[in-house]
Image (cartoon, rainbow, N blue to C red; front, side, top):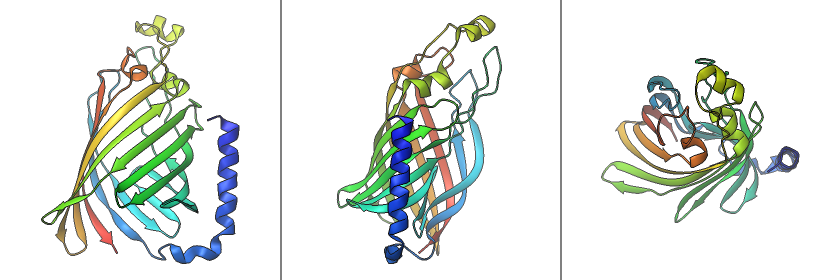
Length: 248
């Protein structure tokens, strides 16, 4: 998806949203969902860096047309199937400081469109992002999540796939000729990648209006990323434990 087309789509959907302000009764007039502190285990899969553990806010809620889904935030616009077309942004921490002869990489700033389709068969998350920061690449993803309950606990298995463009990958994982000379890493031009993902979230009530959330996700990195000389290994994991207040 090129930049001009994406911008045109964003403007079109924003116009539709403004025209539908009278339909706000379809959206909650109060916060509904979960907010709380979370302990994230983030894998630094580059340049031999060790994993990091950070306390960050956990947010998964709706308020009017606005939504927050962990690392993705946005606004619902027009009705679309079993959900809405959404204007979305993602928060990424994929920067890298300049070191060992390699240039600094800035965090990506993915903006785009998406939808959450909630059906009787499960939930489908579809997103298309364009990095408006340095890489000017695209990130496409599709994730399916089911739900089943066992006792008081709810289980949400997830399966998905992510597609990153060559320009996105090359900014973060490529090695230019100049960097190769300075660092000793071989020169590398990263191609596009297709990355499958599996995850599981377990949610358990712990007190009135409070729930515990445990999440684990693993990605099997596509060749465009995994073959980079500055990437440690071909899988990437994320773990999360959170205690959240549940707004009804």
